[in-house]
View (cartoon, rainbow, N blue to C red):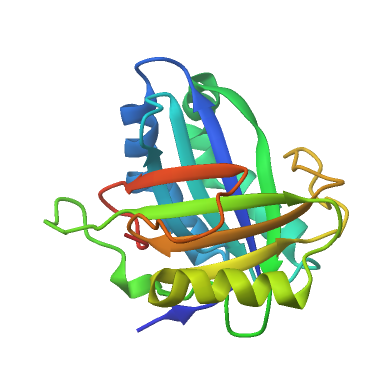
Length: 210
């Protein structure tokens, strides 16, 4: 087992050229996920956005912000990206909808086992994952965090707030200057305050979160 619970997570939403999402998923599942796992950039999940055939959503973790530039530089300067990156970039028409998040409270971050990543061709079941984001006027307070935790109950997979640390790998943009509270939950949830942004996510064949 290789359990990880990264202190920081990027929620990345990419707009993909029409008809190219399946090939982009193939690149992630075949090359990009394992390569980033090996560099200490665990890919917690990669998903199709239900109802939006041109959107790919994925989650990448970091242990700390100080090591983020070095590890990202190692991937984007490495052999896998050198071989397949140009093809991937050619499919992406929008990549700046990215939340940089940290756990809202100790112990409420996403935890996965990297050894649980399905092998290529494995038959696996999935309930699907939902992700909701609240855009706030100020940083989320303890009462709001506890209310959302209580509403989601056992469905809750992870609960995060936006991290104000400046982007230290600026070649990849992130959303800055926002106060966000973002949750991830198993399957569809109904008894929770309606989020400003809601994603219904269908895992790709080799996504760990499912």
